[in-house]
Image (cartoon, rainbow, N blue to C red; front, side, top):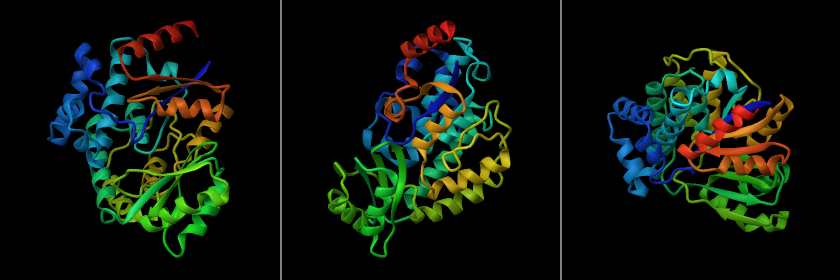
Amino acid sequence: MSLAVLFPGQGSQSVGMGTKLADEFPEARQVFQEVDDALGQKLFKIISEGPEDQLTLTANAQPALMAVSLALIRVMESHFDIDLASNFSFAVGHSLGEYSALAAARALSLADTAKLLKIRGTAMQQAIPVGQGGMAAILGLDLETARALATAASEGEVCTPANDNAPGQVVLSGHATAISRAVEKASEFGARRAVALQVSAPFHCSLMQPAAEKMQEVLASAEISVPIIPVLPNITVEPTQDPAMIKSLLVQQVTGMVRWRESIMRLKELGVRQLIEVGAGSVLSGLGKRIDRDLESISVNNPEGLKILLTRLKNN
């Protein structure tokens, strides 16, 4: 049975994530130490102890979520002897999770991934002054209707779909005033609910162009190898193992829409029947079930989850 490994994005973080893993496995502690050393920062202290407002800062949340995912991968491979290339056909990540996918697939080193995500998070935070951008979850609309709502609310400002997460769950991003108008108008377009999100910046829209330019600059000198399994990028939703293509798509991803619903549907077309989410929380496994109930979705976010995964792999 074909499996895909999934890596979560921002919003899945919580204080204490990964600490059980670090308590139980030296391999996990080593990953957190390597990330701390790469960043010159005691990030694991923030991950394990908080405060929450420090962990939620984009510049901390992005490398922190990657560190937890990669700690799980390291334990999975070195302690449980679950080889990524032998057991999984594809790797895919939600937004910053794409970097986790590339690190897991050996396209990026752990240290480089941590540094890139620190730069990415900082650049995204600084792309637009705090309070001028916003995001909102629109529930109950398909992508095309959500796009029509965004166009109606824009009034010359930026308002566009940023995440097509699942049927009936689209996130809009743009200028704060345009997002407010979209929330007010949502019911006119048939939305069941519209919720303004507590985010520090309007991700995945054209307002992130300064961050995209920064990532283009730093990725130009980044060393990206051929991943050991194909990665499914958020932008194209087509598997690739081409390092030059990967670099280009990581730049485009900063301002482009996360096509998550399409990603999961494409994985199914490619023969995937099980989705294994590796990292904090269980957002992606929940979305997987909403996108296609024929796909089995499980989340692996602690030592118990790794043991369950090992049993499933043995039974496949």
